[in-house]
Amino acid sequence: MKQTIPIIDLADIGLENPSDAKEETVTRVSKELDDAFANVGFVYLKNHGIDQHTVDAVLRASQAFFQLPDDCKDVYRRNSTQYDGYSGVDQEILESKNLHEVREAYDITSLDSFFPDKHLPEFRQVISELVPKLCQLSHRLLRCLAKALDLDDEYFIRCHTMMCQGSDKNATTFRTLYYPSLADSAIKAGVERCGRHSDYGTFTLLFQDDIGGLEVFSGGEWVAAAPIPGTVLVNVGDLLQFWTADRYLATIHRVRVPEEEIRRRLARQSLAFFVHPDNDVMVSPLNGSKNHLPISALAHLNLRYSQTYKY
Ligand SMILES: O=C(O)CCC(=O)C(=O)O
Ligand SMILES: [Fe+2]
Image 1: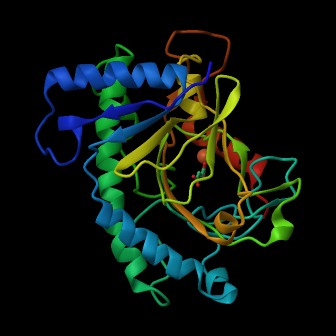
Image 2: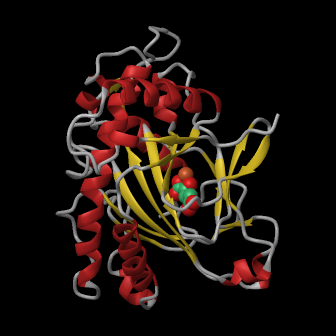
């Protein structure tokens, strides 16, 4: 049966409401999140409270960064020990059969990290406005998630206390993505914008521009995760699937090279916020299953990075 990605209204859980959400909203959102994560692994959230101006400002500054000459961007490259910084085309191959993944990215795990201040001072400024909001929204979702799984309300928040304080403490990463304009020669086997993969951590928040192209493998087929204005898309990561003993689905997704020439010629942008537990949190299935050894959040992530990055 064709699956659709549900939409949840966060109402007073959204960041526009500084005070605690009404208990009935928490109960409703927890139930809806539970259904969506168990059946599709992806969900759109509306009324999340992060205003579009803040998102657009980051998309604009990112575009300016990615359009800098390669030798400027090379100064900020990430590497196997330094997770913050720039990755160029083909540096991360998510689907091992792919020859090329035509995507650039810039990763940030701490607002005190290095930024391309010399070339583009506004990049740090606008990202510093968005990231704290993403942390706050993630905490509100973590509270709902604990309720959905009948845990005490603070259970997941206690495991995610150091988000955005540096990858030595917590690997939560803000990533701005840029898929450059493509030539016709890009339409061939083994070339994708983003190969099929699942995300690695707890969950991911994603804002995309209006170009489209993201697809989610659900109900036995690829379903378009089209951009819906005013929403943020959230998906379950591998670690949360493991944590919930496969109750929640870390659904595979990809971004294809568009067949229509107009869309292929346009660059695409998205902003992802990959939420991870603190590095030393030991994760084992919440149902008490002894089929797997506990693994630290950091060990789990390093294993996944070692499978996809080409340095
Ligand atoms: O750009 C997108 O829409 C998705 C990117 C993605 O799935 C990822 O970076 O993990
Ligand atoms: Fe992803």
